[in-house]
Image 1 (cartoon, rainbow, N blue to C red):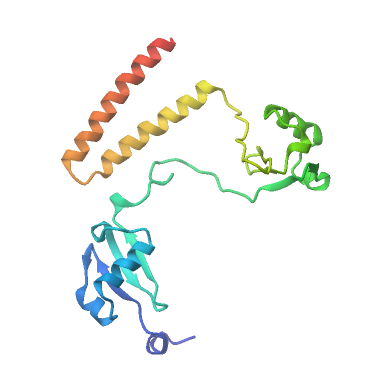
Image 2 (image 1 turned 180 degrees about the vertical axis):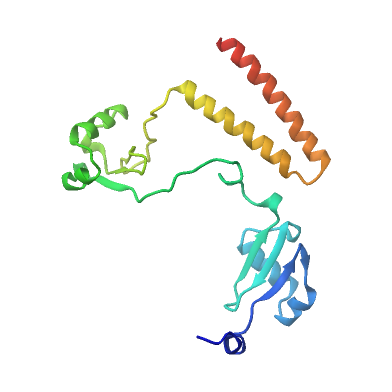
Length: 206
């Protein structure tokens, strides 16, 4: 446990199979991996093009860890510049049509609030199979047949504004991450068209 040199001898070292987007043929041969086997391992990671991979490492356990090139990585809230608050475990306050009173108190709510939220969803208490309060203090329910959306706390106008902002930010970010001028031009054209339509919509609303 204390000596890395001994661990490297006993457990072996990880092997870099792809570095800076280039496949290391000698490393594949060293690990006795055929190209077919290597491609199969990548597919298990939902990677179907070797050209999309920046780094790939075979761990000591035999698993392959993959890091995609930046332009192929999934968009995250951090990349788009959104601040996302930390999530907490939802609190289950309804089970099989019954309110769990003790748990409801810990969520700092009462039965009247629960019934009010259920009325927004056109549901009665006995129709609810599972009801949970999330970290934002919103109630989501399941009837046993389908999952119902949480009640919207904001107006449609506010929600439309948020969606428009996210779409515009998404297009701008994709333009910045584009790998060539041709793709960047396409995103810019989409942005220009989007802004034209948005301007027309705003004028209509005013």
